[in-house]
Length: 491
Length: 130
Image 1 (cartoon, rainbow over the protein chains, first blue to last red):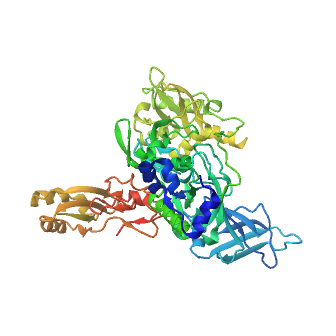
Image 2 (spheres, rainbow over the protein chains, first blue to last red; image 1 turned 45 degrees about the vertical axis):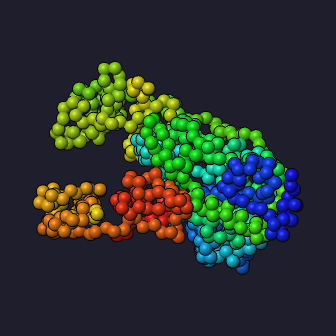
Image 3 (cartoon, chains in turn cyan, brown; image 1 turned 90 degrees about the vertical axis):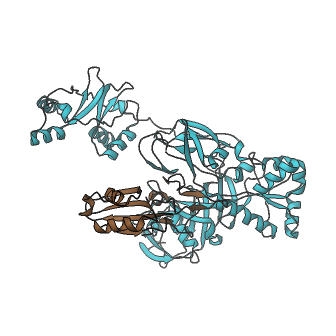
């Protein structure tokens, strides 16, 4: 049994035995947790990956005459200003209003690299803050404070992603190739901080951590903290951060974010803690979920361990699928080695948490008034048979004032769709007699229980204005048009 | 040894059976890695064994096809690359992998310059050499 004070005394004298968690795993395998705990004082962990729930609180200092910033932009990336006059919070995923593939994360990186950014602000002129607008340049040196404060970082584990659909998806989990073309996962598994302290015995409120090269602190459990999917809220001084451990990122089709390096030292107070730091990738489980389904609840394709994910390929439906991490194991290892060095040199002392973070699993979906589904907005559809003449289809469109007619077979199953445009084109070219000659055969469809937002996104993506609503047996139940949806939005 | 050639066709040569003519005339086995046909120009990336390459080039010359030998693969900016590996599972020829240090490395010989990795890189670290 050791105390924080004893460990810190050793660190100050340069006598502390510090291992990275990778080294510790070998030692525990060799000596067992008791002997390893007696030998080792501190184990360092590390992670480096996209951490979207991050940002920086700034205090820009007061201009003359002063301004109460109602809105403020840094390189045209808007920061939140609903606080005091020249305080603002810049979130890393906020996109720039003018620069493509650029966002809050890029502003943060430029500042850490010592560059200047343009500050533009609007105010509303009060007796104490008469100024209405300002444009100037600022660097990290110019501002009073630049405090990185991240509501959710260092996720313990994360669900891996794949895509069963026939369309390439661009997501926050990277680019997912169609038909299970690849798998992506986040987190560094056995070297990631929270996996090495799964009961949150040493990582708690007030723990001193390595945050992008600076000394930072855990200030509580993070948002969406739900063990074993634990998360941390952390803070640190941006002015002390190192560009090696912080990198702006842009996920195509998703948006900007930032890669951050976080290392947490774990004091080996007793054999139980030593045992916990010996955790292996084989023992850390997660699920591969299907992003081909755009609902909140995504189907689980497979349960896997981090060892399988890290191996570079997993088997899905009998096929070997390649896997990409989204976290950098190279930089994560650099983080834990750098933190080890800092402790060995006596530059980094450990702090005892003043309070533990929650060990209760609790994750709720949003309380919603209702989820609007297609069923509630669809209209009945006029249908025709493939052999129906184009002329009859044209008459039907006029009589029923519709632009889309699903084409069905004898059993009422969808086989195609004709639009007023198809009919007009057929008339103009004088070609074709039956609708089957002019109908679109590959029909984009929706289902009665599909949320209207997803139906709307389909119409937008394929640039069409109506979707037949079908059941599991492809029988046509109705039609939903972009007009039906816009009425819903206008309401 | 295999040499990698990038062939650029203009609107005249794009209509000709250039590759099969080259094979029939020289007996060279040509492996097509990538082909693109646009409105005004086309591009084909091929592998040819080095003992036949001069003969094959002569045929391409006759058709007015521009030939560039590719030595480099996709270029990675080491300052920008974080070695996250998003590109690893995207590469169709498995040219991208991790080395023992867990750094992302590109095998130039396997790279077919398709550019798939360039589009997915979150730190904009990848680019085509030409």
